[in-house]
Image (cartoon, rainbow, N blue to C red; front, side, top):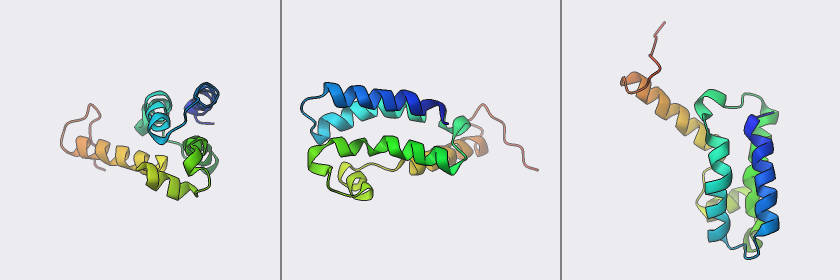
Length: 114
């Protein structure tokens, strides 16, 4: 199991129980500041490799169901409405940025070509 999953799941529970007005703006702000930061910390080093771990993390992003006006929409539609990338897309982007830094000597990790 991904180390950030249980912490973020608990945080989502706290947000759900303690937030009265669940507008898209408020929920997105809470998610970005309190949940996503835990999911993306050291994402290049701790990116999940197993499908079950990726599915668990995708479940966390389904926080958008807590927003009443988006509840009836599908997961991709909710992401689109909130203008969010999926966590998988964000991990791929982080990986590409790290490779770019390595190629251009901007990373502490040296690039070794075999």
